[in-house]
Image 1 (tube, rainbow, N blue to C red):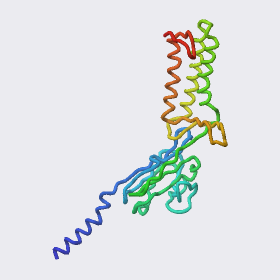
Image 2 (tube, rainbow, N blue to C red; image 1 turned 45 degrees about the horizontal axis):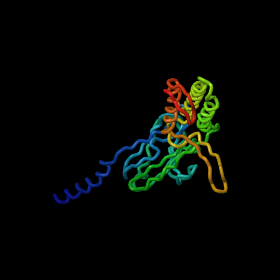
Image 3 (cartoon, rainbow, N blue to C red; image 1 turned 45 degrees about the vertical axis):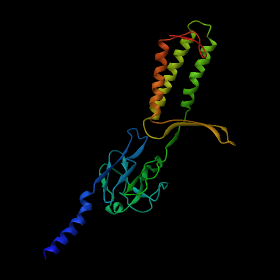
Image 4 (cartoon, one colour; image 1 turned 90 degrees about the horizontal axis):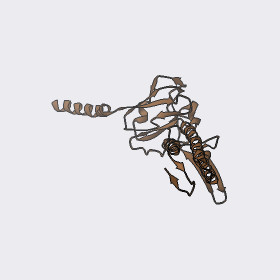
Length: 247
């Protein structure tokens, strides 16, 4: 009789063990303050089999709907939190984390803005996140590259006029600083490339120039823009381009 009791106690312990080690994972449902980006944080979540996944609304009106794959843009079947809501939370049904799998989901109102995510359950293979590419409506980066080159040419053209190269350099670097501030503010700190521009050189050969800035390089662009005027204030230019600098 004692052996039977111990056997059932062991079975009960083994049955409760997965629940004891299961963890609760949280996904934040949010958007930027100016409404320019909508996202889940984290966009890709790795959980163990049996874990609980809770979606917590931070701001904006959103919902959660399962997608058939990473390319789907609408809900067909599977889990769904309901109509878009503001605030609150929603727990993913436990059966969806009961076995190894990869769950794709999206926000129905904002899926076209890239608001989607993935939950990797157990050993499910994590999908390779797509790189976000956003083309700008104005060639900010082209002006940022061309303006210093024009300034160099003007300095060379006025190299025989005392003081002119320095004033040209200072004006050019100040204009470049303003452009770098605009690029920094528009690019933001998110992932993916922003303000992209493409110039096709040869469509037959597939040769083109592609410009873009991401959240890591945009601060470097701003730093370069700041250093230009600071350098111009402390240097007198005798010659420009392939010339001698006296500092």
